[in-house]
Image (cartoon, one colour):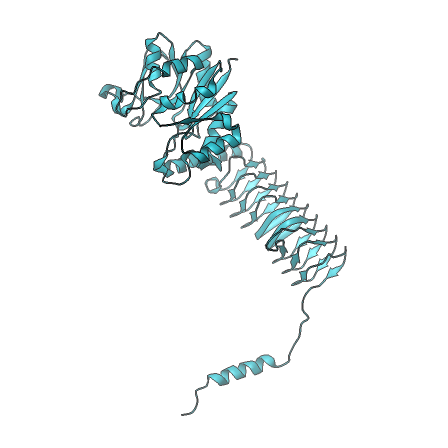
Length: 451
């Protein structure tokens, strides 16, 4: 197979986003839009991926360097259009002999499967392959002026199109593929004699035709081309991702009684046979095994819920929570970095942070793992079959032995031996008649004094 490389254009300023976050780092499904586009390039088998950024885009540059390495960054300075941006990647692709696909970092919904037909055209003899779509409303898009079959004669920008050309519904996505040498040869001939005074990547189509090259077009569904330029368009891309991912999960056997209310992350894994109730939010890094039930209004991130476990309603699982098979984490229980054993239960109003809970243990309502002293975190370990009385405070570092009990309302500061009962509370004192005397005193004080 011919070697492949990708040039991803990420130098746009994104002013319409009105956000301090660079446009391409805004998230869809919990991942930066740029990462979705890099994913597509990797799935296409691109051995080199170059991301073109603007001169002042330090956050984008750092993001690319962290994922692909510093040599994957090319800088466009000053910004003079899409053709100029691709030329900025020429030095980074020096010596590369293969096909280059050009894509855009603000198009998170375009997949490798959508782009692959361009390489099919290249194998079939096309010198330049362009990706297009049929738009229901083509108003803002460049038009593809076609010849016979899949031949592409030229691309006309909307602002420079004639009335006849504006009637064309075949639209340009901006994505194209060509041999590296030919692509940069054509770009060197592009001129900025247009309404914006920019160097358009689209001009390579006309230049290629003028040079006798074969230019062909492939089409993908319009919904694949959701370019994001505003917060509203970002929300639309998120909505599209969520709808697609919910369907995939339900097709795999996941039950969702109100799927439109479930919010997923890009890497959410849910096994068939699991049940997800309404208004559940999955942050990044969640894995749910079969027969698990996630009840309404729960929030999960960075955790694993094993087979048959019951979570919520109104539970919060934070990074490092590992909930064992058939365990119960109930309403208003928060778990962070705790391994909960098989069949253990924390049914309400508790905080479990740093440590472990053994199989079959019962954590009473109001229990707190006191894991932080203002400087460092410490572990609490609760053994198998223990019973932690309601309103217990377990002050870490501490270990409660298997089968032990703690009395309700206890503050436990020392390790508890297996099968022992630990009590850590003040002794109850009763003063007979005190309440009646107190009320009488207060009522007497309220009576008006005689004048």
